[in-house]
Image (cartoon, rainbow, N blue to C red; front, side, top):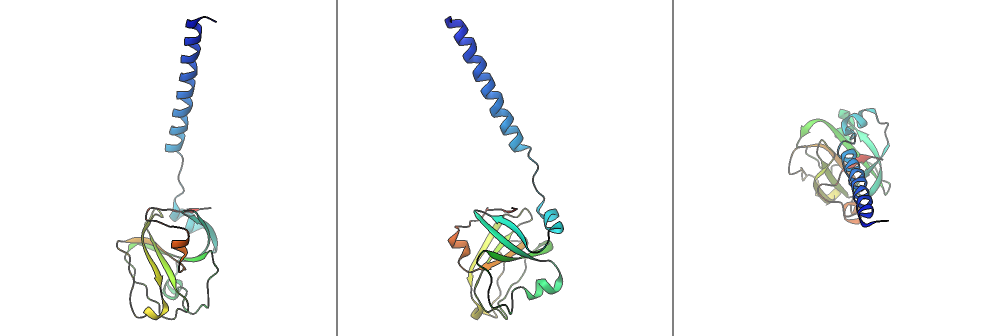
Length: 162
């Protein structure tokens, strides 16, 4: 094989690799994303979702009584479980620990399901103190205290269907 033939084959291989990379990038950019609100509207309770690196079984609270009661009166919550509060619009909700029997982490999420704030280790004896996110949210997730630290959940991590 001559040097010019080798050069032509290398150029062709480089072009093919470039096209494959560009196609992969284009598919990644144009991949349909799951509309979280639509998914949750159709989901049964409980549903399995992923938040950052952790897989959670979530109960859904979207009715007035569920939103008001939350986890009050329950003795405990399974280790990788939570209660996802679903609000109709972006809001700054107020949470308190009235009637709670165990501590929680409250994870505040925007409409896209991204963590925008975390209130860790909220204890039952904090009642009547009120807890709110730093900005308007569409969802609030109550999980066992310490879960956010255990899985190193961070601002920007996303809640997605599993």
